[in-house]
Amino acid sequence: MITYPATAHAELIPGNCFGTFKLPDEVAFVTDRGEGSNLWTTDGRRLIDFVLGSGPMMIGHAHPRVVSAIQEQAVRGTTFYAMNDVAPRLAARIADMVPCAEAVKFVGDGAEATFYSLRLARAFTGRDLVLKFEGAYHGHHDYALHGLNPAHGTNYPVARPDSAGIPGEVSSTILVAPYNDLETTTQLINRCCHDRGFSPASAASAATPAPCSFSTKSSLDSASRSEAGRKPSEWSLISVRSVR
Ligand SMILES: Cc1ncc(COP(=O)(O)O)c(C=O)c1O
Image (cartoon, rainbow, N blue to C red; front, side, top):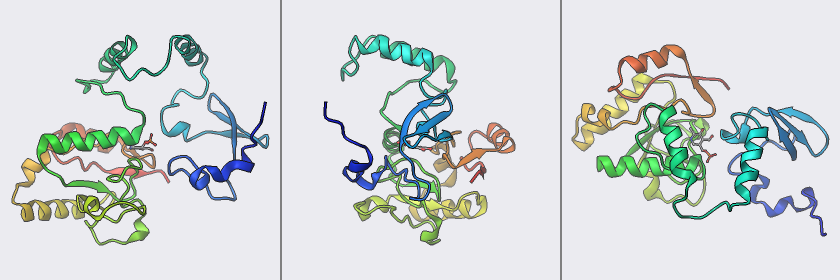
């Protein structure tokens, strides 16, 4: 059997990273395996994994029940691109567990989820503009990849793309507001609504409630959460606390 040492062929992977997750060279490592909350690197170190696959490994790596379920399904086939027996049953379990889940759409990753969410919101509201918060990561697709790095400038709400290859027409549909700054954000929204001739109240009804997974770099504090609970129809500008 021919073996391909990872380090010798790393240049075949663009950026030598997955998605946009790239560690600085001095701390970069190559993962050999994961178990529970730990990763083992190819040079024999054990690391605590706070990234957890960017979300999906929330119960840890290689949990025995997950491994067993994967093995059971693998022999029956894995990808069909057609309705299958398992999907509606899983959808029903998710709908039971998530109070707001009226319908469930399965997607491949977080970027695909936010991509569809934007399209759905635009189709429903008939509006193209979307406001995001500076520094918040919502995936690598063209709409989401704006305003990640505050060092890019503060000409709010102009959205600066974080990658080459994003058309200006796409950037012009995104507004960026400063993180954790309710006052400035409210002003931006009011100005934007005024310029486009619709009321902030009707815009608010189309706003997406800020999800708990607002960004991997932030977490909701409990006061903000209860504030959000009291005023569900208001703008989804609940404050978030950076844990960086
Ligand atoms: C809030 C949020 N949305 C979307 C994404 C993108 O997810 P994925 O890396 O699975 O594409 C992330 C990833 O960290 C996220 O935190």
